[in-house]
Image: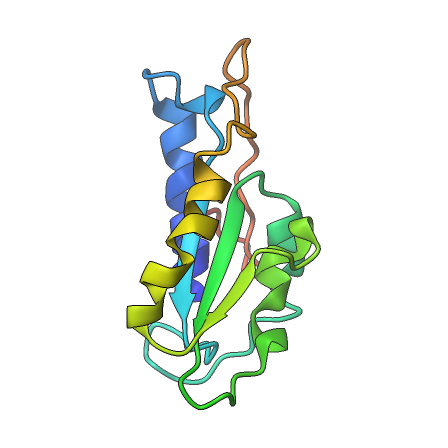
Length: 136
């Protein structure tokens, strides 16, 4: 979950300072994972439910691709990352080779015309505050 937090922080920072109309585009994050969350030191780390509040506060659409060659992954370990979409953007594949077979699903998600540019001024987003008081 540390990596997801860092990516969300980077999206936030970029949107606060961009001059290319980035705030008018829908951000989409593809997360390819084995659903075994670890911290940056590699130690096991529970993601859900700890990331739920963060995920509810972001407007980034997250698509989770679980690579599960042995049918042993417990999707509930990362399902809170897609809580805004009711966990509908969780795809399970057997191997990385299977990504090709899901190309049409991915294309439908990002090229569907369902994510039009918004208009208006650049919104001000509040930064995420971590439990230790630091700002992301």
